[in-house]
Length: 137
Ligand SMILES: [Zn+2]
Image (tube, rainbow, N blue to C red; front, side):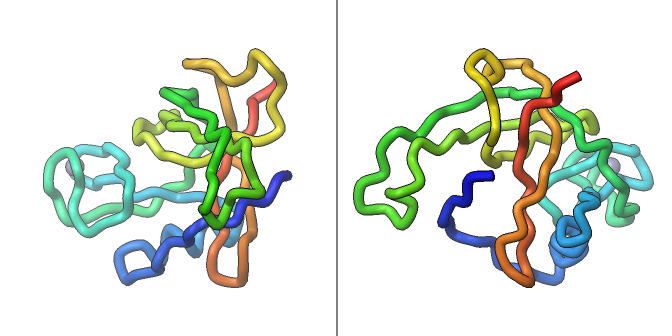
C-alpha cells in the first residue's frame, strides 16, 4: 500500500475509543441507543436525534464511493512526493460518510457507487487510519 505523509488527527476524550478500534483493525462507530443511527465523526451527541447515549458498534467494513477526487499536484505540501493521491468520500453501509484515500485500484474501479471495503494503515503507535480498497468478489 502506498504511504502518504499527511496531517494526523488529535486523539481526544471524544474519539479515543474510535482510534483504539482502528488500532485493533476493527473499526467501530457510535450507534445511538435511541434512534439506532450511526454517526461520524465521534462525539458525545447523536447527530440525528441529540441523544447522549450510544454503543460503540463494529462496522461491516463495506461502503460505496459517494464522491472522489484525484490530487495530481501538491507543490510545496508535505505530501508533494506522494501524488497522485486518490481522495474518496465513502458512504459506509451503516450510513455515515467518511473521507479517506483509495488504494490498489484498477482503472474503472474509481467510480461513483463502486463498492469498497475498509483497510487499515498503521501510521504510528497511536494512529491507524481507515483507508479503502476496491471490494472485489
Ligand atoms: Zn439518535
